[in-house]
Image 1 (cartoon, rainbow, N blue to C red):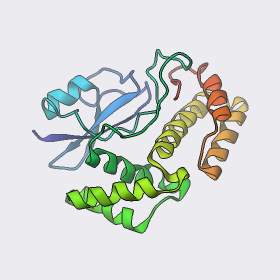
Image 2 (cartoon, rainbow, N blue to C red):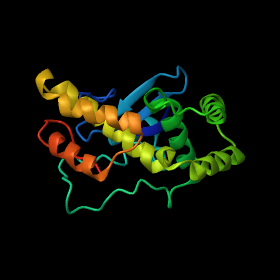
Image 3 (cartoon, rainbow, N blue to C red):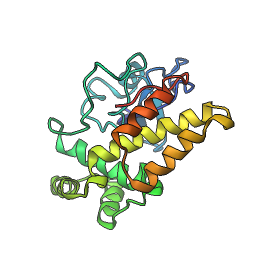
Image 4 (cartoon, rainbow, N blue to C red):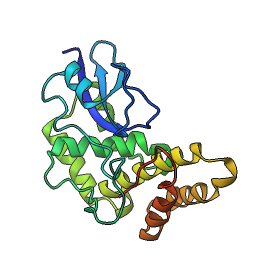
Length: 211
């Protein structure tokens, strides 16, 4: 197949699948890489499988763990742990690299020279089993604000806070802008902040609830 599914990532409802006219209304898309050109494409599950083959969407890095489905609200559902206890080690290692060396590197200043080398190696030639073990060992010993679960949550919250800010009139964005600045400066999200953010986001069309 000319395409490889490289991750599952967040996307807004205004984005269409790159392979068909459908909007990506689930807010979670599969990112496919053209193996000849390196170009990235966003797709829903059906188009991802049609273009990358059966089984191509299984066991891939998932950066959407703290975003609930569009019709789910906080309250009675299970809480998101964001852990990787049943996931394969390579998947967990790549997620950690992507969060620290790509998705959050500018916001949290969380780059680490050894992880940066591994991220570049992952993009150019792939990781060995020993690389994967070392990355996951670094992640397991990281301080709480750089743990895999905390980084996953921050990535999801910042993505949807930004989406909410973009959809609101400027005179109604003060709370979200303020809480965003606090999350970035402190590198964590409190339980009180989670509840307050979700209360704001639930009234914004096209923005989901978060775990």
